[in-house]
View 1 (cartoon, rainbow, N blue to C red):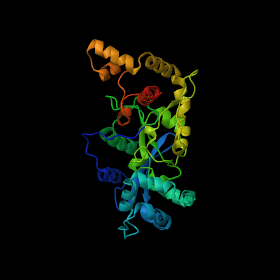
View 2: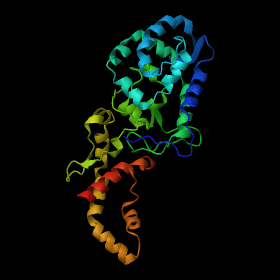
View 3: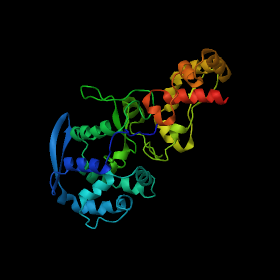
View 4: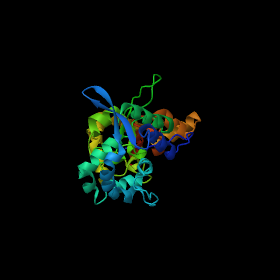
Length: 315
């Protein structure tokens, strides 16, 4: 629901991220290593690349159109650099991939799915390794999906967020580790709500993502239930049950509306003149800080707070 914000002071390199993950999984030219959990036990596994060479080559060709657009991977056995391109794929490339005409054919090729699941091993070790990149480079304040819960890293190293595969990884395993397919969100949104839901809209990393700019409106002034609607993002809104989640905040909305009715701009100007203070500072004292869309992530319910107060101003 919110656009993902990178830390201003961080120097993020998608190339370094890709190399880090590849160095963890690919320990030699001939094998890919990882851990797999079965019946509560962790087993070390090693897949010999040569044993799946033919199947991999047969299945990867359809993907090259998306991830090797400059056609500089002449060697078809160049697994490392092909995977690096997948890991580095920009948000718009992932969006085109998910919405491509032949995507159904790609994910229904179960042989290909098996291959990618072997090569992209989702183990606890690599999960923590990946999360370190988000800790270091992404602003972690509130959930980027619901903007209701705080997300952060605690002093003991544990985290109050999880990484959601924006585009469902079981249907598109090749982009399991792609940086721009992983969104830091609260546990509720990831595991209880969105979970395995498939979405095909643009992701919060995409420059053209605009759901954070689409305003909540009040469905009726008796219940004060806020509602968010937009055809382009209907699958995401539905998957996250945004309107159901925000229906529990009708008392909060009612208080904001009543406060705004009590303090219209004319009264604030009058009070500011009497108190010899700045109008905007007085507004902050009365309503709290109203954050702009680029800073909604800094505080839970910041988007709702902004939308309801600006909505009452317009009315």
